[in-house]
Image 1 (spheres, rainbow over the protein chains, first blue to last red):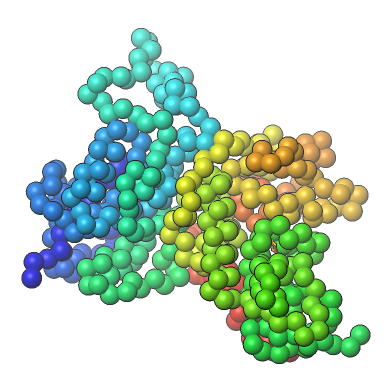
Image 2 (tube, helix red, strand yellow):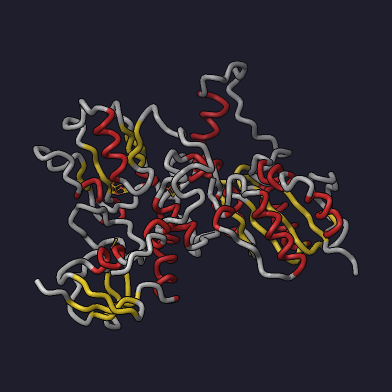
Length: 183
Length: 235
Ligand code: SF4
Ligand code: SF4
Ligand code: FES
């Protein structure tokens, strides 16, 4: 039987969730036995080359490219898993959601912030090659259907491992109290 | 006064009449979650998380005194579902960025979400526009995390000062307000007292925080309520 195929991506995230995946230590060898990786920063495959079984999503959607990638994942993966606070609720990038209009964020970042030094022409990047920044940061499940959620910042390596094993083997997931944390 | 007989989860207990069901349950090692209730202040019954089935009706046990032959169910699947839903609502209607919160690991709301294994709220996040009030030299009020339980208002902070906090506005605009005059000369002890009253990270001491490592915080290893459940006392 062919191995289940896994794809992963980091949208508006910090790669911490991917680091946490690597935190499974020597079990990474078991993981390679269990699954095959397709599009993922881990193997640097940039585009889907086949249909995948499990898509692991880190980060929420803060720009048009994130939305595009997420929709690609939905098309190419049977099961999508939101991994980490950013994918689940926007996380720290979503701190701009509650009070700051996008114009204010851009002005702060490119014009007014104390660390801005070399922008005499007062340029806010707006090239059409650049992804459009969204009005707010969206949790992944507000853009596409997400099948499972693994909270944490980053999620504990054991949580990611237990979930992957459960998905691949079809057994019920082991969920001890210590592994569900939001920080 | 002579004792009464009540039945909790199918077992009979003798209890003092008039005592709140919540307190009796606690004494016999049955945990019922609370949020707006704080030991020592008059219960208000507003958060509904302590809802139990009493003689077939859903009632908040922090405000219900025990009566003779009362039959109470504290942990049916339906009740646990109601509680988990209340927790989800509170997460969806506030701005709870736990990874950046000083209270994380010691927060009652977060601990309840852990207890109910909340992976994601079933409701869309509202991301309401909320502010932070950092004018006081010792404490900071973060309205993003306030669950409006009123514990800070209801707790009489000092005999001569009824409260440091008040509610301002109405409806979904309501928020707590710190009396800046009364609290201008706050010391560390009073600041700590104010912070301890709050179940979440809405009242935070300044220049302090993140001082307990991850893994050693109150709810890192032990679910909220496990201290009550593990005491195993029978009356
Ligand atoms: S108050 Fe509690 S639930 Fe809210 S952000 Fe802080 S730790 Fe999380
Ligand atoms: S500040 Fe804390 S204690 Fe006061 S109402 Fe808000 S959550 Fe409750
Ligand atoms: S604790 Fe009983 S209603 Fe809030």
